[in-house]
Image (cartoon, rainbow, N blue to C red; front, side):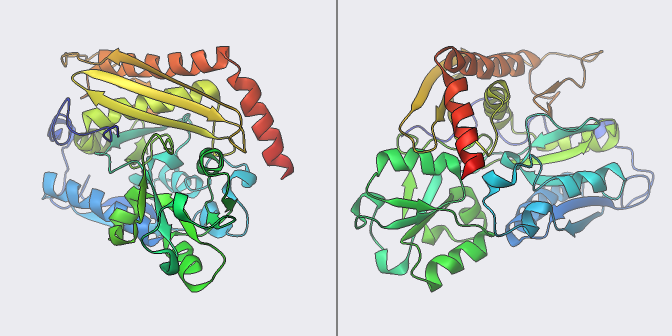
Length: 376
């Protein structure tokens, strides 16, 4: 099984260490004499993820005071509709970005996979933290404990809110049925355990691990079984693009390997014009200075698919790149402490894999998937 990308091949720990040069707080406890306000969704997982980022920042900047501001998003409020049907690109981010724009918060912590490949003007991803395991996991109903998907009885119902997961698993396990299941992790696990509607549900392994529920993982889906979502398992810190002080502060959290993998994945998705309303999937591996990207597109039932793997070298030294391109954004990410040539190579790799798929008919597969999803 391919190892999850981001395992320290280029640089260990936060890329480049604390970028304190731009941090000149005028007061002891915050930026400009006030607390640094961190925006987050209200869900338990979002709070855990935000707490982990704030904890890293506190270790790097012990003199600063951080204040967490929680809010609900559109995606948190619409719980009776499949995500792919709502058709809103920023379901879990818009309200947080509004608060950022109004200067009510200074930075926002997201799951990177929730962030569209093109951010609204004035925003940037100032940090991509070290990636947790990006694979998908199967959580079984207690009566199916110890089984795998292939051992479940015929017509067993599997819950997933993801077209990507359903498309791949329908093809691999045609004897199973797949149904939408919405709600946060707690809600979905409750629906699984307390009712007989589902034999198992598919969730991101990273979220289960962060919640301390690793023991519920009955089966990890290898990339051979199910390629994962763009950015899955990585946390992103979004900031105002022109807020140099905050940008410098959070850039210390960048994990170089994760940045390069996610730039390639996001460039792939952007070139395909994909989103949660179409089944697009990836797997990235960074090994010995080589970045490998597998990208795939699927019809809704998984019967039609295209998959390709390409590689590129990302082994470049960090150069002093101060100047007009100092804060260049690549698919929404600003990472000036990761070599610019490596970022460019990663971005080009994503575009090339997507272009290859498009030349083989990916546009048709995705447009049919989009139309079918709209009429479901």
